[in-house]
Every structure is written in C-alpha cells, then in structure tokens.
Image 1: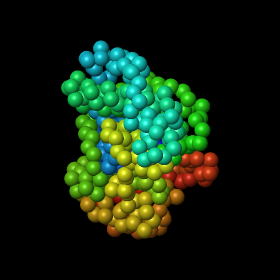
Image 2: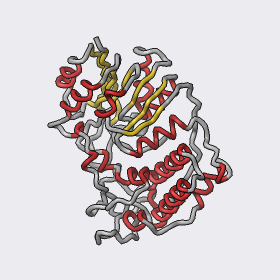
Image 3: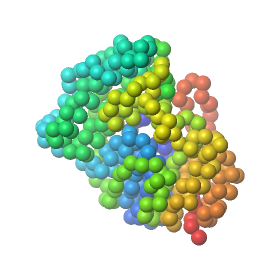
Amino acid sequence: MSYRYLGNKTRLVDWIVGVISREIPIGSSIADPMCGTASVAFALAQAGYSVMAADALSFPVVHAHARLIAKKAPDYEALGGYEGALDWMRSVQPIEGYFFREFGDEGQPANGRSSRRYFSAKNAAHIDGVRAGIEKMRKAGEISETEQYVMLQHLILATNKVANISGTYGYFRRTLSTSALRPLSFEALKFDRTIGNHAVVQGNVEDLAPKLNTDAVYLDPPYTKRQYAGNYHVLETLARGDEPIAVGDGGLRPWQEQASKFCYKRTAADAFRETLERLRVPHIFISYSEDGQVGEKELLSILREFGKVAMHEHPYSRYRSNAKGKDGTVLERLYHVKAI
C-alpha cells in the first residue's frame, strides 16, 4: 500500500516483525494501539499473531479495519459484488459539496479565504460524490460496517494519490501538480485470510493501556513535533464523514483536543512514562527514531524503570515531507522491555 505518511513503517515491517517473532511465539496476542496506517499490525497478523489495533484518530481505524477485519472482499450485495462497488465509486455522480467548496481549486471556502488547491475541482467533486453515496447507503442499511470501512479505505487511498501536497496536508502546493490532475482511481485491494482473532477500536493509548490484556504491546509513538491530527486533517474528515469548520488559509479542522504529548519536547518523556505505568503486559516493543523528541539515554533510563531493556537498530532513508527536509539515513530503534 503506497502511502505518504509520517513515520510509516512499511519499509521496516519485516525487520520489526522479525525482532518480535524472536521474542514471543507466533500465535500470541499483540496490541498495536498507535497503529497509523496499520502496516505493522497487518504484518503481525500475516505472521500469525492475533492483533488488537487502535488509534486516537479515525482514519487509522479505517485502515486497520479494512486490513485486519476484512479477510476477504466484502459481498456488497446492494452493488452487485465487490467489482460492482469499485465500478460505483469510479462512476458516481460528482457533487459540488464540502470538499469542492473547501479543498478544490475552484472552491469558495466558507471563511472567505482564497480557494485551497488541495485537489482539482473535478477530483474534489468526485470525492464529495463518493462521500455522499457511502453515507446514504449506510443510513439505508444497504452496506455493513466492514463494507463501509473498505469503501472509506478505497476513498482515502484514492484521495491521497491525487492530493496536491508536498507530503502532509498541513498546506497545499501553489499550482496543481501532475499527479493532482490525474483522476481518482479505485483499484481492487488485496485481502488476506489471516489466522488470528483480530479486533480494532478507537481511543488514546493512555486510556487503552490499562485495558490491554495481550501477550505483548507494540508502541509506535510520534517522534517529531508535527501533530498527526493537524497534518492529516483531510484524511480524518474523510474517515469521519463530517463537515467541520475549515480554519484559516489551510482549512484545518479543529484538532487541538487530539494533540499528542509525544510531539512536544517538554512533555514527550512524561508521555512515555505515563503510558508505560498503565501497561500490564509481559512484553513491550517500542519503535522510535534517533531523531525523536526524547534522546536515547533519557529514553533508556525511563524504560529501565519498567523492566529489562534490549535495543535493536536499523538504518533507513529519512522520510522527507518536502524538498527542505533532511536527507540521508537515520537509525530506527526498536526497544524491547521485558517485565521482571
């Protein structure tokens, strides 16, 4: 699944799962309560683990549900099957609605700002058409919860491919890029009948931590100052199906209540400690970059308060959300805390 996302672990999943599988047996249960694109959760499921995935934001929950719960193509009886659902999304009647107004290059934002060039007018209207159709079918009971999530997964992936952005949705490009001028595309997803018993919920890791009753927990907290709730506001709106007030020139949805303490240098260390204090599992694995807000020595000191710590390192190319980002390689660290 090609995806522009801060901290996306797609290139690291084989290494991460390899380390975990050497410590806990295949068939064990593991929670991924900060699942993001669900790439690690899905890889763990494919390896034979039972996975509980969660996230504070709505669009990662869509990813996790579509990848873990939908083990085969949904039936979509109301649309003549899965291929019928794809055809419907491709040919749905466009609507000049919320996305056209707030995020299309020919829109007129409600706050009177200039048009926001996140999408071409044609693509924005197509997005509105799909959004409206999914909501109509949901209200009519014509699609199941899983069918709704799979459709939203398709819409998020299609939208992300044509978004006129440098890397995140913090702002849009001045002119429409070549990829932004391409039409939305809805290609069949690959489903996997993984053997584990999986679950997907939504919630903050701090709230979920005391309730986790699994053999292990994998944590992938934010490591930069960039808040996911703000930088991926467009995808969050797609997942929620709402029409929030689009604030400022960039049209961000109100996101401050979803801000993560892991993103602030002054609170990140406390966020680690508070989360670990609430966990009651024998194994904790933590992905964290050497570029993180908490340095290696400080993080090791915190982790050692909760058990025996082992650290694994893997070099990989930096994620660059724009041309001004750092180049070169960076070390990804996977910490293993074994309770004693």
